[in-house]
Length: 444
Image (cartoon, rainbow, N blue to C red; front, side, top):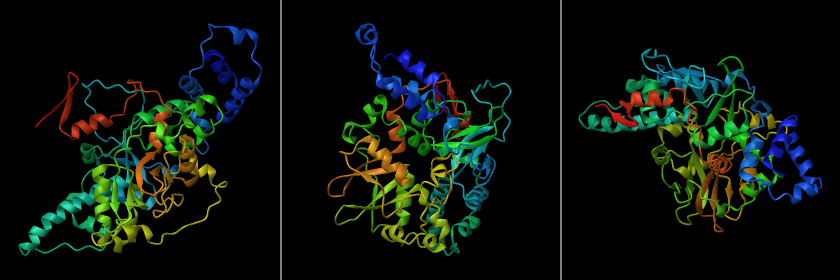
C-alpha cells in the first residue's frame, strides 16, 4: 500500500483518530491484490511520513474538552504589574495567562503574521513567582549590607507581604520579563486545523500550551496541552507507523537531558532547590538521598504555588529542608479517572492547584529497557509531564519529558512562515536589541 492509498483512506473515513485508525487497520487486514503485491514500482510506506500524513487528517476539534470553561482563559497586559498579575492568577487558580500587547505598533514598520490576534506571548504563574524570588534574594543581599550599617531590616509574613514591601519588584511590569525570555511565544490555532500542526508547534518551540480560537474571531476558547497530544498519540497504538517508533526501548533514543541530571540533596534547603530550578530552566529537579544517592522525590516548577499557600514555609525557606518539603502532607483527593478523563486531557486542565499530579515524594520513574510507549502510558496514567530514568538501584540516570516524546513523532524541519505573534519582537526590544541583516545587534 502506498502513501496515496493511505491518504485516500484517512480522507474518506469520518470521525476522530480512533475511527481513522480502525479504517486503516481494516484495510491492512484485507488480503492484498496480486497487482499491489507484485508491482515493483509501488514504493514502501515510510513510517514517519505515513504517521505524519495520518495525524494531519485529525482535526483539533476531536480532542475531548477542547471548549473548556472560559474561566481558565485569562489575559494580562504588558503594563500589568507583577503584584496584580500574580494575585489574579493565584485567586483564579490558573497556572498561566495570555499577554496582550498594549503598545501601539509603529505604522512604518512592516509586520506580518499568519494569525490575526492581539496576543504576543504566554506567561506562567511559576515563572512570575520564580522571578520575584530571585529579585527578593538580590534585595536581601543588599539589605544585609544596609542592616550592617544600622538600617531597619524588612520583615515579612509570607510572599504577598514581602512583595508589598519591595516596590521595585511588585510594581515591575510584565513586559520587563521579556528581556529574560520568561514568556513563551504564542501560536493560536483554529479547531479545524490538524493534530499534526499542533505537534509541530509543541515539538519545535518551548510551548506550554497552544491556544485554540474561535473559527471567525481571535477569542480563545481553550488550550491544547502536551498531555492532550500524548493521549491522542497513544490512540494510534496498533498502527505500524506509530509502533515502529513507540515500541523502541529508551536506550535507543537520545533525549535532551540524558547527560544533564539536575538534582538537589534531601538535606539542602527548599530555597536552594528553587534557585536550582531557576538557574537550569527545567520543569523539575530530582531529590536525591545523600547517603544512598537514590531518588526519593522531586521539586517541580508547578509546586512553586506551595510557597504562597503556606506562609511558614515561605518565611522559613532558607532553613526548611527539601526532605521536609516533599514529605509535608498535602491534600489528596481520590478521583474517578474515567469520570475525569475529559478534564485530564482537556485544554482546560490549567489549574494552578492540580490535584491530579503525582505526589512529590513519589515521582514517576522508568528504566532504560522500557519502551517509549510504556513511558507515554505511564505519564498519561500518572498525569505527569516527565519521568525520571533510573537504574536497578534507584539512582537517577536522566529525565524524559513530554516534549522529548513529542519530538520523536515530529519531522526535523519547521515552517518558518509560522510567526510568534510579537514575542520575539518584544523580547528583543526589552533586551535593547534589533535584528539587522540577519544579525542580532545590541544597542548600548
